[in-house]
Image 1 (tube, rainbow, N blue to C red):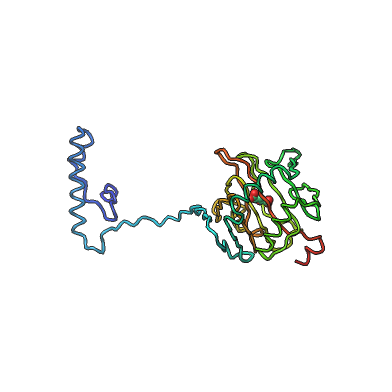
Image 2 (spheres, rainbow, N blue to C red):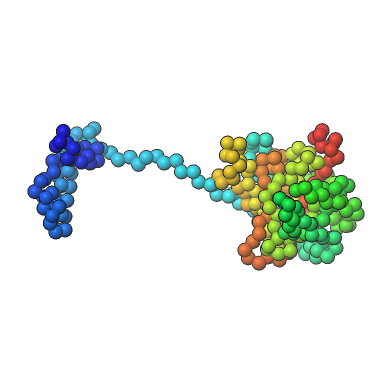
Length: 290
Ligand SMILES: O=C(O)CCC(=O)C(=O)O
């Protein structure tokens, strides 16, 4: 037993008996003595292992480690229809149409919207603190629009260019819209934070048509985590879509129920960008039926 305790277990087999003279020289002597002692024990161990039948030789297997990594964001930049997920609430679909408005037209439309839309700065109140939204907005439609406890009074008089764009988008998409949220990002510091367009007045599975003019900005989407993830977004699926001058983006199906989106601030300077999101708003009782 004593002898056993003195021996070290090495790579699955018992090491040979310690060479006492070499060991005591190694303990008290110079480093070259110590190296010699180490070499001789290693050699005797290798010799011993060579003598073991293969089934008794130790084979090192690294433990299978479960490493969980956040998935790489999927980048969507080409024209097409993309099913970005199929559950838990059904199919979430993105339809991207770069160049929906050609560049020359997009240039004058952008200038006109910049000058002629009644852009307003809105203020939010969160935990009794008020702060300015990091962008300017305007709301068109028959009904006021409430989000983040802020109600926007509707502009009933649509600018003729907005009516023309609404008609063009309706023709192309075969969906009709009665409301429009206009966003003006003055520069790279303007943004919109993570949210879903899931207000009850939009009904279930709303179709949102979003037209971008001006500077290219990244539109980011992230999937809402399952309940067992306790609201932790670390490992959720992500989609990045660069939205440039004249691009139309459609979000459909469960894209609001199962996903959130944002336009983050940028670290490099950006010119202004106008974004128009066309939607359909229902009165309370209509929304209950959709
Ligand atoms: O500017 C954008 O592309 C997105 C705007 C947006 O998320 C919104 O109006 O709800």
